[in-house]
Image (cartoon, rainbow, N blue to C red; front, side):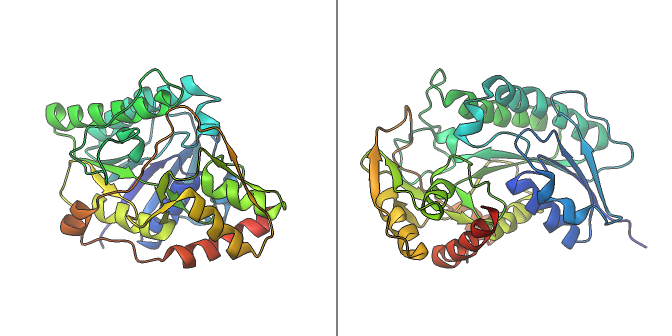
Length: 313
């Protein structure tokens, strides 16, 4: 009888990590979930606790990681991802990107495990190339307020490639663009949950700048499918996973208002420092290498997300 694949997921109680736990359980794997619960919540994974193929470790991965037994895969998703978090805990954000990644890569080397690290579209900074391809090196301010997150992820990519090159560790790098769906925190601080939270409270929607800046939103199910396909591929360089359907924040705010049936207005505030003006992935590589592209429309995804948020108030 073939032994089950065993996977360690860091940041497992977070938005993305918890959906990854669900995915690997569904795929018949044994899941070791790890989180220090600084931004994650046990409510995201408590439905998995009764399962014999699921175990949870409350641990800070910037400290030494010990997992007994074999590991086939490691998915490193531990990190604050929202400006509201990483501006509050900048040192911890840098440490999880540097020390945490170092520890995960060391564990992968020791266990002969394949490791996938969660990078981000933020490595492109406020891009001078549009849409963003994996070959673009980015336009990041290392000493600006967002630098703690951007540079932590850029360093993560560098050390991952170093372990691949010099220690022959089997690595994968996913660059994740804006993602949304159930289990996002309503007070996350990013545009989508903020807009939903405001309409649910009957408040006017706050748009920074003139609202012409663009984002592209990928539904969580599509993202998880792309990550899984990348892990199972034999490609070790970074791959963009996101939805190229681009929309201005002005138009997006109007979509949220229409969906909710609310009578609120849009009000404008000054643009935060180093806020990207454009964000859209070029997913040619994902299409070619993984036969992956998003299939959930923004309208369908927003309806599911809105229903989730209505229950969270």
